Length: 74
Image 1: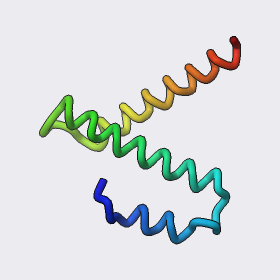
Image 2: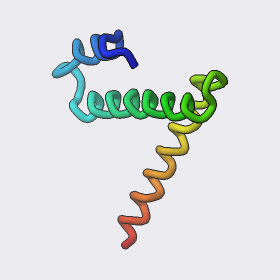
Image 3: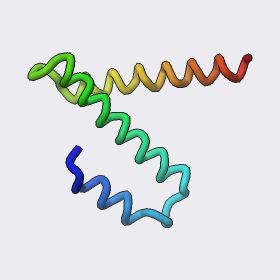
């Protein structure tokens, strides 16, 4: 993601106007998606698509949720 981008501009505009938890969640999701895109680009190179990144992001989320539920049971 470019350093200067529309998402950061918009999310900064809403800082303090939306609940902090929502603000944080939006930032985390977009950051995760950006990192996943870089990951699929590393694996698939020119064949990488945004859809690949979204699927990887879902897998990461599922793994985090699974790890969280295992920790709670311990």
